[in-house]
Image (cartoon, rainbow, N blue to C red; front, side, top):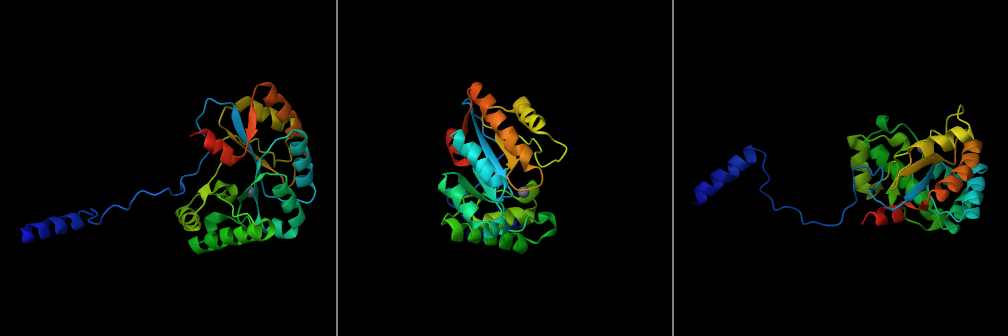
Amino acid sequence: MRRSALYVCLIACLLGWSVLPARANSPTPSYEPIHRIDTQKKVVALTFDDGPDAIYTPKILEVLHRNQVLATFFVLGSQVDKHPRVMQWIYKAGHEIGNHGYHHGDLSKLTEHEVYEDIKRGERSILKTTGVLAQYYRPPGGVMTHDVMNAVQSCGYDIIHWSVDPRDWSLARTASVIARSVKKSVAPGDIILFHDGGLNQRQTVAALQELITDLRSQGYRFVTVSQLLDAAK
Ligand SMILES: [Zn+2]
């Protein structure tokens, strides 16, 4: 019997089967990016990348405050270090803070260790400035390689992408083009991508008010990424 058990084990090993006990189920972060959630509820999440910016982030915060809207800011550690007061303003206004890494480099050219270091450096900047340990990571450009996934897994973040991209960074886009492109495609459970840092954020600020007014008139509520994920449960 012992010999036959050994043969089974050897065959299993040759076939690549695992003879080790399965790892116990535990609540682990998701390493597949989350683009949106399925829900009938009219909720969407506004997200802002690449800040904090000294000029545009305060303007966006004012629009959000005026409309009593909470959003999620995927901040860059390098920008947090440059503008810590703006970062604290985001936090004190009650918005959710996500990690967008430190340098906004091209992740496809980085090793797993370099991606890991970039995420952790961004994490430290956020933690030092606000005391918040961010829960969500958004890779710059949405780049997903095996190295990125392994690095994010080691850091313990959920990856948040988006489902609506009005390309508000494009200098060719006016505020009404940006607002219209969101209104045309938005659906319950969407995650909308904006930028509070970059080149064209004057148009983003103008589009934001128009969009909030219009989507509210359609019955939409604006929530943070955490609240959106809770709505899926
Ligand atoms: Zn970005």
